[in-house]
Length: 112
Image (cartoon, rainbow, N blue to C red; front, side, top):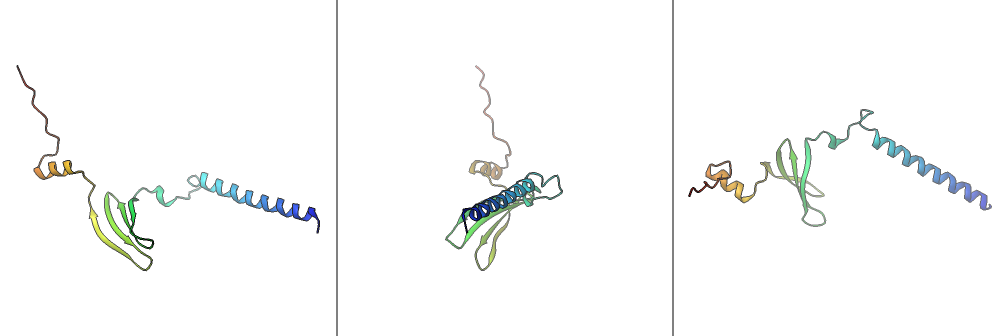
């Protein structure tokens, strides 16, 4: 076996890898036009946040139709921790809501 056999093998291998790359690029670019819809294109489901507890388990906050769910994901089972969590609020907004005021109070102007 001479150098020519190895060179032909390398060219065939490079051509095959290049062809796979071109097919992948075309599939990603024209997926919407061909009627292939990706899972995240629907917009109803999103991962809001996640925290790794250890190497095998993590907490994931999933948002679905404006409602959030807290999940504990592990290798053997998945557990729903809390369901129906509303939109996140900061402390000031929560205090206003508790007081029954939906808008930020304004300071009246002073007349002299």
